[in-house]
Each structure stands twice: as structure tokens, then as C-alpha cells.
Amino acid sequence: MLTTLPDGRVAQSWLGGAEAGPLVMFFHGCPDTRWAAMTGADAARAAGVRLLCVNRPGYGRSTPHASSHASVADDAAAVLDVLGVDRVSALGMSVGGAYAVTMAGRHPDRVTALGVVATLPMHASDTTPIDELVERYRPGFAAFVAGVDPDDPDDEGLAARWLADLPDQDAALLASFGPAFVAGSVREALADPGGYLRDAALLTRAWPERAEDVRCPTRLWYGERDERSHSGGDWFAARIAGAELVVRPGATHWATLAAHWPDVLAWLDRTVPDDTPGL
Image (cartoon, rainbow, N blue to C red; front, top):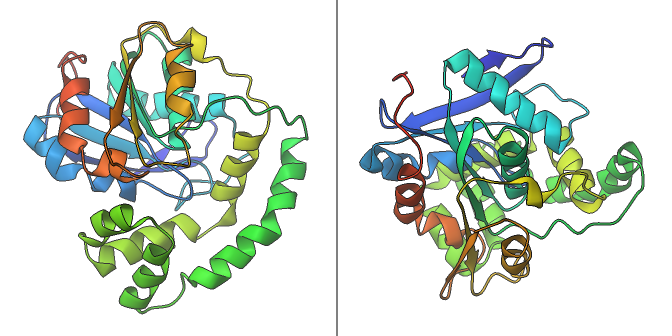
């Protein structure tokens, strides 16, 4: 699905799950896209909720842009306007958690609940200009992409290279969707370097957004075996009033969400009124 934003840029998104019902807006990780939300389609359908994910600028067919956490949240709100959706819950996975937190703090009238999964704490202190950081990370990202070789037409080979770098638990969950799914998601995520480079620059630079601004019900899900983001749960719990921290025993990074979609969506569903039109 393509949406034209107020400034003329295009936002690519995916909407799935139930045909009607409360809407959960999902903010994907890095490098990743709306394909991550597709892994929750069956769980969303069973829960009676709709699941929406908008590719951030530079991912897939979303127009590259000098984005910020705030601009991504505003883009998400603009897509909701086009869809005629008033209130949603926001769910962010990994790097996407920072954008979900910003959405909840910046648009409190629209976000009735917040879910944060495996997100690093927002304590970066780098004040280097974002454009300079983007260029600093470009060579390393180019080398990474070359190793993955997303232009390879062999789905099985591409999927195998991608899965090889993931923890075994995460790789098994993603592999269950088949080589064509994995390859398709990788190709979209790596089609343009702009998405990843912008995410990386924003992640390591000082963040102006405040987790303390979130006022809606919040649940934080973290994996016991997730070394990438284990410190984030306590950090957000200390700053978001009333936030509940759930630690998944034995879970690695992606598995913290992928193995628990039904539970996550069930909690979010309880907090979002079904006052939006079926699309």
C-alpha cells in the first residue's frame, strides 16, 4: 500500500490481520521493513485486530528523507489520517521501539497504549551532525550488503546468508516462513541504504525525545537471552509512569516478539477501543 504524505513524499505500508477491529501500529526494526509485521498476520487475525506497519523513509518504496524520530511519528499519524483511523496502540520492535515511544509521547490523543520490545535505552550522547554520521556508517553498511548480496535471485542462498547471522532461536522462527519470505524481506530492507543509515545515525546520536512524556498504559517485553538490548527494559520502566516490564525466559532478540505475537496483541487489544472503520 502506498500513501502520499502531505509534503508529497510516498510512504509504503502493509495492513493485515483482521478485516475490521482495533488497529495496532507496528514500528519495524533495523534494517527491516513492513515484512516484520507480516509475521504477526495470523496472530492478529485470530485476535481480531488489524496490524499496520509503515516503512520508514529509505526503506522499500518509502521516499528517502532527512527523517527524525518526530518526523517518522508524524508520518505515521498522516497515514492514519488517510486511512480514517483515529486511535491506535503503538508497538515498536528493537530500533522501532524508539519511534513507537515518540509516537506515544508526541500524539497522546491518538495512542491509547504502547508496547516496546527489545529496544535499547535512549541514552546516546553523540552530538555529531546526523549527516556526518550517515557518511561515517556508509562504507561499513555497503560492505555488509555486499556480503548478503540481496540481488542474488536464489531465494534459498540469500535466506541462508541472512539467517546465518541471527541467534539460532531467531533464525528458526524466521526460517519457518520459508526462503521466499525471508529473501523478499531482505531485498526490501536493503534496496536503499538510506533507511538503515538514517536509523543508525539517529540511534547513536543524542535523542531529543523524552520517554517521560508517555502517559498511556505501557508494557515492555524483553528477552532473558537478548544481549543486544537487555538493559533497555529497566531504563524505560524507570522513566515511563506505570510501565510494566515482562522478561521472556530464554528468549533471544527477535524471539521476544516473534514467539509471542498472540500475547502481545492480546494485551494491546484490551487497551484500544474498536471505534475505527473496517478497511
